[in-house]
Image (cartoon, rainbow, N blue to C red):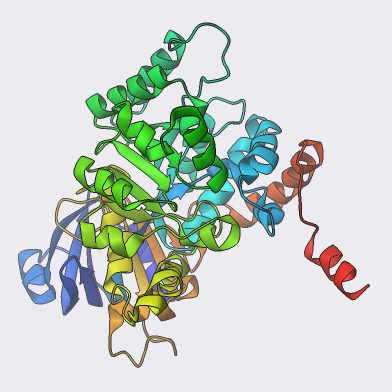
Length: 466
């Protein structure tokens, strides 16, 4: 397909793309094509019909390829990419010892480069949208917006509204609410940046602030992101302080609702599942984070059965959409399926659905992205299906979950523009960014007061064999 690069990049008008198949919301469609115009899917339908309806367009054939919606990362921390392996082997609540100190060491350039590096990794893994839960770096959040925009990825951009440690009385600091209002207004109409509000954990903000920020988000049709019921220590602190678990406490103060995106939600009681279902609250199911640094696996199969809205999130672990979908299935199989004799655990399609359209719904972009459908943003992947893993296909959706990987992604489009070709940016210098990130990361980590409980793998091996 190398001969297609000029056609895909240089076409000033609409594109008629004719792959072997298109992954539609209702399933795989052979002989289907799409017309992309003004950043949207203008038309989706049988290729011959679209060719007749658009005789002025020279169809770009994509032989041996599948066109599918881009993945949505429902939970990310773009300015934590310099940390990478610092979290490996660490016990829970590493944000206190690793992430907060690391972000505190970032200046404007390093925050920008960190966020753009994370965006590049996400695009390479097929993510066309990321939900950033808010940086705690002492920089204008527009630095992160600029990095995402320059990289070419769609971003639900959180503004942290923590105020629990602020001086003064028990009421909400008006400045917090003023910043929240200005953040939501600042990116209104931005084609790639969708403003969101965030509170790190419920205990990081006063009750009045939680209630008011939730109201502001709901009134604006925006998302409020909060880490909820992630670690045992956080649940226990909430019980001691309020007599309620974190999710129950948010419900008690009126903060739950369709505007809320509860990150992780790994430790849920049956009552809390009911609260999620009854209030329409969304969840970010982060299976790789559970495997690497969590206390539990969110009951995502139970959520799906109860109609609870949820998407899949990386939590900044690794930016590969196919491997994330596989981890989502695998974690449910190990944590719940084996014990109950469930050999299907979502039948593959569940995780593909929640990695795309369901994820878009969870982050507040329902109908705007996450599906190949007329009127939606043209955020999509062109996937090679001639490779050994996918060529002998019997069940493409399930095979994408279990056998797909980012090496099979030929092109990534966001907003109708090709952003990556064979894993590399098409309009900016990816290798130069990576080299600069390596330089800055070393300096940032050295000056950050990071405390690790676990040694490096080399040191651990030395102790084991010593």
